[in-house]
Image 1 (cartoon, rainbow, N blue to C red):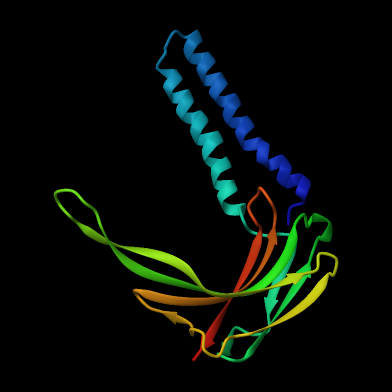
Image 2 (cartoon, one colour; image 1 turned 180 degrees about the vertical axis):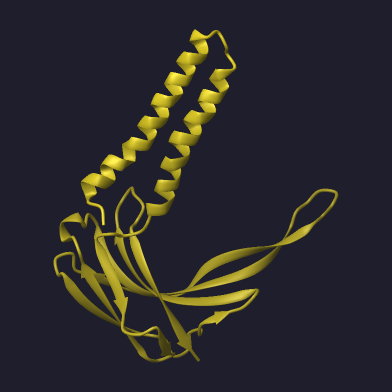
Length: 191
């Protein structure tokens, strides 16, 4: 596992290599009097600098690394309790309010029609929160346990082609002005 210093160092190595190679190719192209190297250098700059940085952001955005989440089991029935354990791995990195919750997400297909002469329609999947219940978590306790009751009249887990209900226990750090890091553990709720 890499340390924070190694991760920070790796964030600038790839972009620096891309900038240097693009500058060298551009200089070589201008020195040789061939402006054909300039577009190649710009493409190389984009591929070596912009793409890795955007991929890295996409992979790490939203995922919490300074706390861990575990559930007591992966299956429960409606009306039963689910216990979630939250462990703070690095309490000093917690910058916002912590909360832990039981969440049911509904995904459903909607038929959308595009206007115009062809008047075509296509299916689009929409997402909505069917149920959620949150507890505030302490930013100073390393190990915490929270119990949630699955509502007896709530939806049960279902994976359909047009309608799905997915239950999970979610731990989230709420920060103002930034994306909220979170962890999510799926659970299966039977009828």
